[in-house]
Image 1 (cartoon, helix red, strand yellow):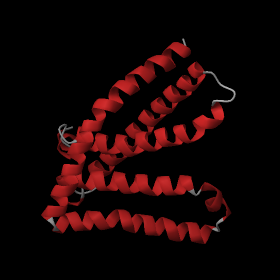
Image 2 (cartoon, helix red, strand yellow):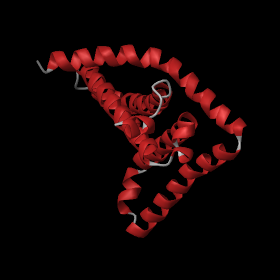
Image 3 (cartoon, helix red, strand yellow):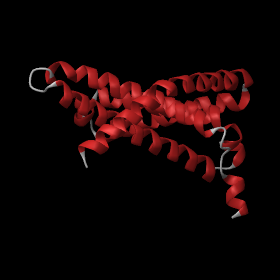
Length: 178
C-alpha cells in the first residue's frame, strides 16, 4: 500500500489536469450542440432542447472524468521521471493534443470511414508523435513547462462556469429519469 501511495499523483495537481480535460471536451460538446440546434428548433420545444443540452453536458463530464482517469493511470504506471514528476505540464499537453486529434477525427468522420487501415495507422502514429513531442520539450525547457502550467491554471477559471452548468444538467438528467 505504501508503494502505491508513492506512485499516485498529488491531490493539488489533479484539479489542474481535470480543468485541462474539461475545457476542450465541454467546449467541443457545446459547439456541436449549437451546430445541431437549428435543425431541432423545427420539431422540438425548448424543454426538450434543454434536456438534450443537459445530457450533452453530463456526457461531457463522463468523458472528462475518463480522460482524467487515463492520465492518472498513465502517471501511476510510467516511471516517475517520465510523467509523474511533471504531471501538470505533461498531463495538460497530452490532454490538449489528444482532444485536438479527437476533434479532428470527429470533424472528418465521413472521410475517415473510407480510409484504408494503413493510412489510419499512419495518422495514428503521427498523433502519438505529436503527443510525445511536447513531453520531450517540457523535459528540457523550463519555460515551456511554465507556460503549459500557466495555461492549466487559467483553465481552472473555466471550471467556475462549467461546474454550475454541470450540476444543473445532472439535476435535469436525474429528474427526467426518476
